[in-house]
Length: 120
Image (cartoon, rainbow, N blue to C red; front, side, top):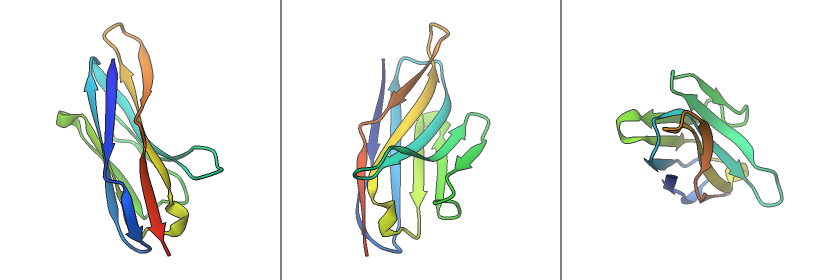
């Protein structure tokens, strides 16, 4: 079983910054991919950024240059540094990991979500 605990959301003024954290714990061999997704009211969940175990990053066009995904491998923690926030960034942010289980299979796990609200 794998658990993800997110923190760092909140209310911020437009142009401000927030840093989200996601800590993974449980029984797994490794984390192969870490990612952040978001879901705004009435919209589908969308990818924000991903980071592979090899260090490859991928960002949605809407956050490129403003958001940075990173990880602390020793602590199984990932971060999303969000700068120059806009009201359009308002959403519930979810972390997701793809882990290698002791069984040899890979599986996805999601965090519970953290609200980010950007005021204009």
